[in-house]
Image 1 (cartoon, helix red, strand yellow):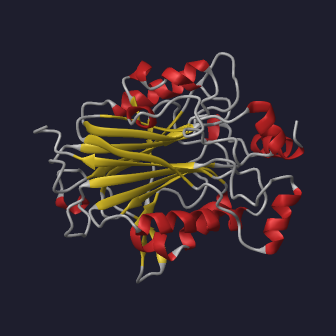
Image 2: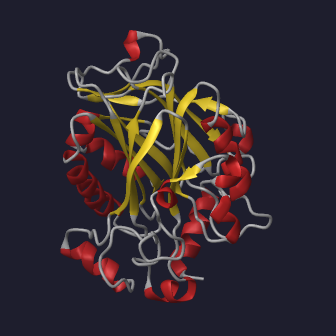
Length: 347
């Protein structure tokens, strides 16, 4: 086994949180704070969440939000130069988000964040001005080594933010949910539920990704949800992963628009992995977006982040010395799915 993989596993084990010491119960929603930047205080402050019927949950914008651009990207936690790699990845995302129409809200799902990544993200001026953050530290993660975080466009209202820590996991994985409010499109009581998840890695026996996605789907298909999206690193490397969406009443964004399995156009892992790993495991479509609900109409799906490299000669030299062909920020490509938002009551 690769030395850095061994080191990462050892670190993960060392930072494992004792189930008896955490405030949540597995497979149950656990409410967590989300944060907005207070320019006057020059600090991130807990943001209020309120019922979707309340005007206080509406964002401070006069533009009607008609579409959602959802980005998801796994930034490898095992590689060195975490700050430089995250800064380069965020710069790439910022450039893409800046090109969105004013009527499109953006949401960013990140997986395999290390605690220092949260500080890096929180320092970005464009994140502070446009987004709320679900996490400022690792307190909501089941493991202190790495976890997920979500950036939510402040054009959207937030009715709730919660995690569901999987009972069936060996790697302390969870599902991070944000219930968004879309004034002007969704009627009071209608919720857009967004789920950022990093499904179980490798080949556990029995497979754990099916029960994890089954749990996610129960929340996405709840009666109060007019549109639900789950996206992230789904670690889809087994035959059972090909039907995770259809088995649970969800639609796969890539396939919905004519994408084909086992094609270069769909692969999100392998192209930027170390050559020996690519030769051993090949490329795969690990990163996906599933969706459901009458309030969503899929507009487009694409990969993002190809060939994004770190800046700085020391960092570049360090990554190349590990055997990478380029100084890539991560071994995954990201994905971007754009959805039109519809009034589900009258659809």
